[in-house]
Length: 213
Image 1 (cartoon, rainbow, N blue to C red):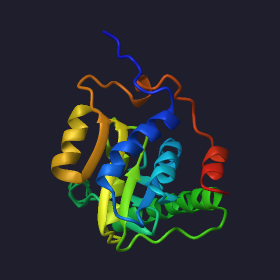
Image 2: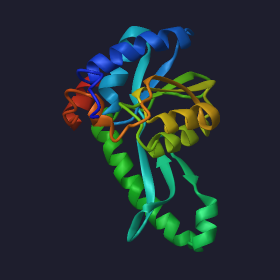
Image 3: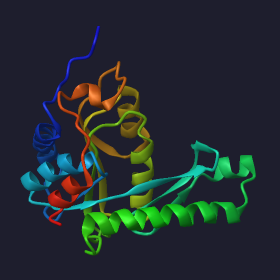
């Protein structure tokens, strides 16, 4: 049995998600951090409804050269780095190689931040309620890295918000990773795009426009 789309597009998903979030994030001064690019249209709608600030939160995986699927850690907006120490120790990865990979990914992260923000500084996180938004969670890897990186910036509270997520990933986040608001968590998930009628690629220009650039 094939899955039926739940949302018409990311805009509709964001509006629906905002209704649920309004009951969970009632405090003023909340910050919506969207994972680009797909999370930005969703986050934009949430920010509108909650009258909250909107910014991007970029995560770059630190993949082992030649085996990029092996994530040695991740870096994220705000100059933070999270390392998978157990994997690094197991594979005996030298520090100089990790630093080299980090430097390369930092260049790409800075390029994207400049592109998306147009030179505007990142919005402050410390002491604020922060909602991390994406258009869906399949493996949850990027969002897990985002949560870990965000915590290093000491927000008052961190909430993950997605329209749809694989059920096992939703349960994992709820139990072990972070507070999560999710509208649908199907048992048979396959891919995020399956749950949208229109899952067109979000362009850099779309991100710039939604961020006010």
